[in-house]
Length: 156
Figure 1 (cartoon, one colour):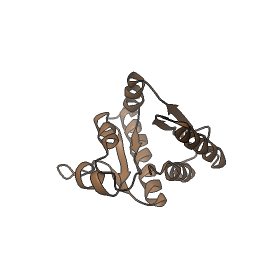
Figure 2: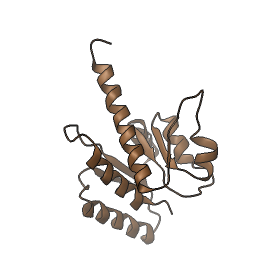
Figure 3: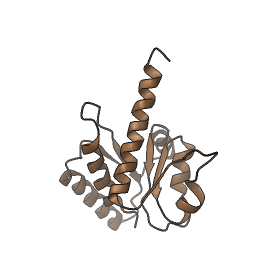
């Protein structure tokens, strides 16, 4: 399972830990629906977002074109992957190629082959529990905000 509910729960908890004076981040779930079971899962996720009171910050993108996918990835600050023991995790590679910080499950391919330190620098975050995902989301948003502040500071 891709554990999308975990992602929504982590995002909801992360929003509560962020500075309330800052704009709230958006969480975009992008994927395809191949059949009724997939459509039912999408509806369940939409209901979960409402239940968590984050529906205003969550966008669902269903069956997008390749061009739209590239645009969404290109505008992303981070990408969340929460599937346990995924053999490789191509979506994590796609996040990184687009310049987004990966927040991936701490198992299998993402752990062993993708989200690795490079030249002593962390390339992303690995997580298993909701709290670990929350910490990674908060740290990623904080990094993004600090980067924007530094870029806009006229003294630099």
